[in-house]
Length: 87
Image (tube, helix red, strand yellow):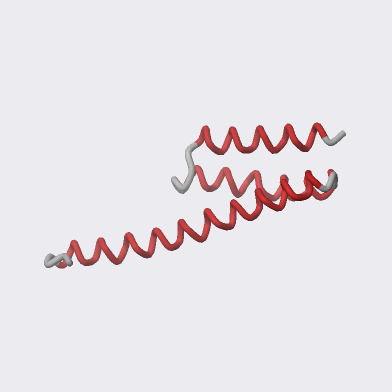
């Protein structure tokens, strides 16, 4: 355990931030999973609607440092390609 006051504060801050990041990452993964489920069920309209909701959320995660830019770009590209292939 840390003895210095600033180190103790940093431990508290990092645990709060990691909890927030974990919740946000989980929310994003759930959204991605729901899109993949609708693609598997061949429900293009629902998949498009969910994709429109997912895109800005992923972009915000880049700005907050949760995910890297290329990771988000790759994810969006793969999902949009799956939706387009539904026909």
